[in-house]
Length: 431
Image 1: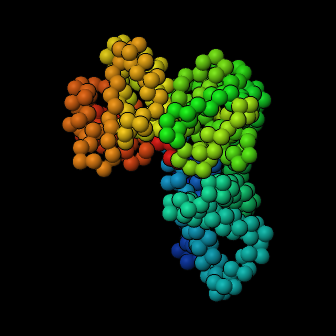
Image 2: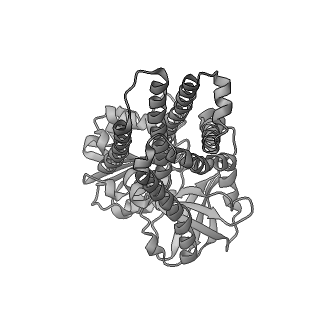
Image 3: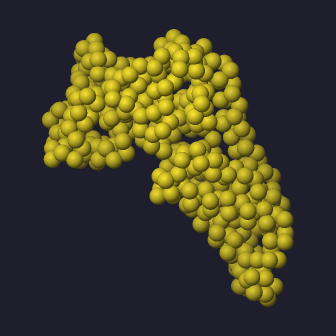
């Protein structure tokens, strides 16, 4: 997992280095103000164009990248990189505008009017506006107040923004010598996007023909959805992974919802367990048997492949029990090698309890319920409490899944308890 992340991150930084090298071999040193502005505009423009390609690649859902790095980490990289791409776009526009104004000896307003008279520049300016709109709606404070469908629709404008800017990039200063490189990079990313975001989902839908067969109440506001399909072994969905589910029912069909498998794939059966936290997840309780489902994936890297030690501790908080339950059943290990800690506010909030206890008894695995409100004086996930429950805690691999706040606090507690960072494996599904 760590090696995959290092390789992908190294590849992205290496690509940026190639872009800087392409700029360096073309630059013509000059102390004139207009030339300095033009040089800065050229470099920032090249890096901005490359940055947009990286953002699109990170969200292309390439299986090798998703499974190796983890969907949550890719999403964080995407969000983090988006800020810098916007800064580079604005910097490019500002440097180009000032350079043109100085070179022509005109004021900034006149320079804007003249530059927008060029179709390629006008298209690039429109693309920058679209990127800015995506950036604004992705800010945490704005996104919390916006319906997911609206945010997603705005976010898809990144593809249009990249297309609008492409022609302008090919017309850049002395870029014709390396136009093949730029066109090839755009072509590769475009093919990956079309293949994995459009072709593969359609092909999977036709091949597997997944349908809902039952919706079972598991607890207050929590249901399990059982689905049957065909040739499900071809999905190669592992315990701990999630798929994006599109239920073809009124008020649900237009949104792909990421939910983890709450049980291993058995024959032609799939199961997810969902807590009604938002409008869409609450509507899942009203799914009718026979509803067609488009399942895309699998995604995520919280699997047995990340294991490095014989003993494993699973820590689940709230609905984070769903991938942990599947791992609890399937991770190889002898008596005492697997332990599950399940954090919940109260006993009635425990989900899949009977299954967990049956697995624990059958495998002679450890199972502990950590009950109580999150703001209680006693924290059952504090370093001392964890060490008391699992005396050889530092010798375990730890799999962690829960709400972001709980996951961050538990990770910090594990580090203080002596668990090396490389042995703590987690994914956050709030992205």
